[in-house]
Structure formats: C-alpha cells, structure tokens
Length: 455
Image (cartoon, rainbow, N blue to C red):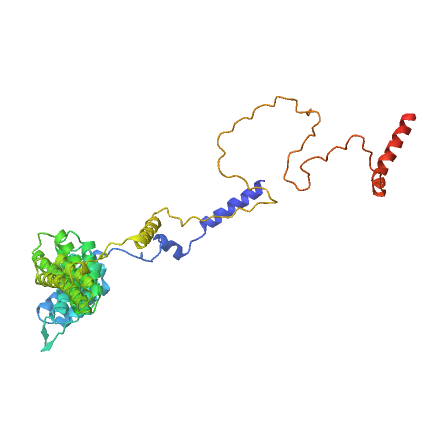
C-alpha cells in the first residue's frame, strides 16, 4: 500500500518543480529569477520622462520659430517612442493645433481623435474636445474659410461623423448635448428627415435636463412641419408636427419659442380646416347636401370665428333655403310605421344582442333520437320526490275470478297480458306431432324419476 502512495507523491513533486514555460508566466505578469525580459506594461523611468520632456521643449522651440514641419516630426517621435510619458499627450495635442492652424482640418480632427482615444484623462482633453467641436461646426455651418485662396466647402456628412465622434468619445462632456443636437442639424441639412428626428429624440432621451433639449423638441416639430408642407415625407406629417409642437408647449412653457410653436399649431390647424372645407365643397357640387353639411359643421367646430367658418355658415343657410331643413338631416327624414318599423326594430334588436360581450350566436335546436323506441335520458331537474302510498291488500293474492296482469314493458317480444284460462268442461286439445316432440324429454325425465323412487 505504501508503494503506490510514494509514486503518487513523487509524480506531484515532479510536476510542481518542473519549469513553467514563459508564456504561462506572462499570463500572471511573473518573471523568472535572473531573466532579462521586461514586463508587458511598465511605467516609464525617470530617464525616459526626462528625455521626452527635453524633446518636447525642443519641438516647442521649433514651433515658436516658425519651423512647424520639424516641430511636428519631433512631436510624433515623442508619441511613438515614449507614449507613456507625460510629454506624449501634450505633443499629440500640439500636432493637432499646428494642423488646424494650417487649415488641414480633417487631419487635425484625426490627431485630436487619437488624443481622446489614447489619453482620455489627459490634461488637454477638454481643450481637444472644444477644438474638435469648432472644426465640426466649420463643415456644418458652411463657413467659407480659405486656405491659400481655396474655399472650404460644407460637408454635412463629414460634420455628422465628427459630431458623432465627439459624443462617442466624451458622452458626459459639457459640449456633448450640443454635439448630439448638431448631429440632427447635419442630417436635417442633408435632407434626411427621418434620421434627423431620431437624432433630436436622442437629445431628449439622453440629456433631458440640458437646455438644448427644448430646442430639440421644437426642431422635431419644425422638421415635420416642413415635411407636411412639401408633401414628400409622410401624409400624416401634419398630425405629427402638431403633436410635437404641443408637446413642446407643455414641456417647456417658459421657452422663448413657445409663441412661434403656437403660431405653427394654428397654421397646421388652419390647413386642416381648409382641407375639410374643400371636402365639403366637393359634396356640395355633387349635390350630396347631407354630407356637405356634415363637413361644413366640422369646419365651424374646429375653427370658430375664422374666415372658413363664416363661409361654411353662409353655405349652410343657403342650403336650408334651397332644399329645406329636413332634407339636410343625417337621420331618417320621416317616421316609419307598420311592417317597416317592426322589421327595423327587429334588426336593431339583433344588432344589440350581437354586440353583447357574451353573445354566442342564435340558439340551435338539436334533435334527440330515441333508441329502440325508448325515451332519451331526462336532462332537466325532476323537482321534489313524493313517496307513493303503501298498498292495502296482499300483493301475492289476486281477487277470485281475476287473472293477474303483467305490466307493459314496451318490449314487443313480451305480451302485455297472460293468455286467457280454458273454459270449464273443455277438453284439452289433441297433441300434434310437434307437441309430442317438444314434450318427449319431459316424459323421459318423469320415468327416470319414478325408477329412482322405486329403487
């Protein structure tokens, strides 16, 4: 028993004392004793920090002297060779500023993006985000800044990408809500109303407490308002625009744009009234005066005191004098009686019954066939059971001169009564051959019985 245990202990010891491969040690960041391998990530030494700082001062001197090309090369060398030093983020930020001053806005924005990706806690992070925001505005607002006499044209798609990059890298920055709003602005100017509405809604969802949220709500109504005027976006854009403006007025009653939002709501309502008036005039021309009066009254109800309302009232009065009031009523013109009224009441009753939530259809009568002439099982309750009276005579004896009867069973094979008894003095009928055959076994049985008794 001791030998297997000793072998097991020896095997475990060999596994423990065996040297681990370098890849296994690297998983935990360990380093073998006496090894010259460096750790995967180590803080820069004081020598590296001093060298990077000295190179940064040299690059700044070149930049101040106007030799920006050599200064950019020095800054890039710092970022590449000593990326973990304190001088690296400063050098990268200076690269972006030099490119921005030279008018290379896209390259400058890319350099700033490298900064926000590599050094999100750098000291220049806030100023870098501000610089990115200003560059994106150049492409959004169409400012014609010139570089060597060449104008820079607007690029809404590029502006959209830049503002989205700012929101992605700095979602909690003070400029993030405005950057998200400008995403909607860029999409709106690029004739993408659906995407613009989604961008404005994102402002309200992510930054509801920011002052730009009310502008986003108003802008949603503005986009839908113009889409309704163009008629190219959605037929229901009028309703959506009015709902957006009404939400804006309810959510931000102190905003300076409330007055304009109310005017837009009134304009949208006026356009609906005009459309209703046109429908009424259509039915009026086709001499469907009942339908015309319905739409004229709709105009009066939706826009009281308006010009359209006055025209509708005037036309209703003209139609009353033309065809009479009874002809303009939407209900039945005259009372009905007799069979017509009865049929109408029955139809109305059917409608009322069918509209009930527990309506399962008309009653259906199912035939219940009988089996062998027997009645079907009763399904209705029988009511109280009454005990019958007890018989007074002896049920085993019958009155003299009477024949006991058998109750009718309903079975055709059982006669309802017994055969009548033979009359007095009558002789029994002579037996036939068939009767002799039937009574033969009985005779044999009688003889056997007599022989048994004799024995």
